[in-house]
Image (cartoon, rainbow, N blue to C red; front, side, top):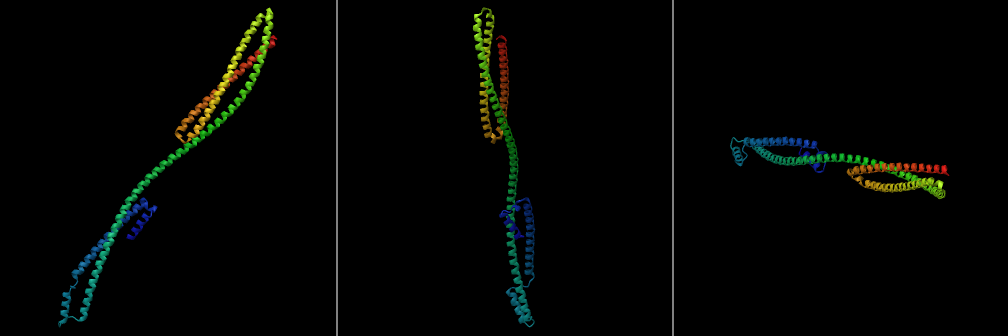
Length: 327
């Protein structure tokens, strides 16, 4: 049993993972109880041997020199025993002395084994306390690892969501860039058409001015000339209004380009801030709001452009109708 306890102690020192669990602690307690029982058995054996030794000392014949001399004197008498009996008694005395010495040696060995087992039990108890402390620390580490694992899973889910939102934002940005490109092409076409219409209107106005000069020579057409002058002034005002609308449209386009640049910077900032999951959501919401405002402003600009085109088309048709009617 002592050898088994020492082997288990050596396994603990070598870092055997199976001997650092609660089952190992139970085994150590069981071994401790067995060692106690074994120590009690050794003590009982020692007591029995000491009692036997005392009984032997009390019950054996005196082995001193006096008894030997007395035996020799009796042997010299006429009624003494023979030499063989004397030799047998001497042998018996020597055997008893040898047995007493052996008993004392066994007692000494048993006491040494008892001391060793007590030392082993004390070391096992201290090791048991250390193992229990290690088990408590391991449980705390396991709980901390479980908490960290749950937090890591939440962060991974949040990262996936943010990546998905970033992908959606990238698609929306590509869509808005395509719409801006189409809008720029439409604006360029409208600009060319508007310039052509302005040239036609300038030609018409020049013709109207020529007619005005001709009508000034004729008194009967003075009223008509006055009306034509007022109409020309109205056309001039409409021209200025259209020019102002076109300038406003250019300003809107510039603002849209500025907002697009701002949105690009915001997207870059968003890519940098994806590492911080707390602030990324708020930035994405603000950027979504800005994009919605930009889309609404784009729709409003498109509505203004459509209204301007309708107004210019209506005025052009009216001027043509007027020219065809009075020329």
